[in-house]
Image 1 (tube, rainbow, N blue to C red):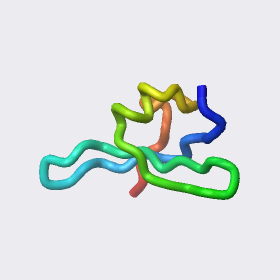
Image 2 (cartoon, helix red, strand yellow):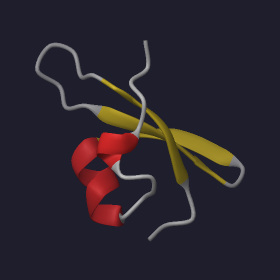
Image 3 (tube, rainbow, N blue to C red):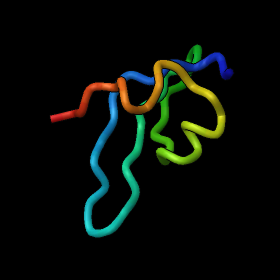
Length: 52
């Protein structure tokens, strides 16, 4: 498990993968769903709210 925490997920457009927005201490970033899952961020990707 990583230190960061997922805050929300965003649907990929034009064939792109879905992403999760992660806050990790003093930085925040978008990460592809497969990397989010592989790196063990919490909460689980399927539990993140969708960004409107």
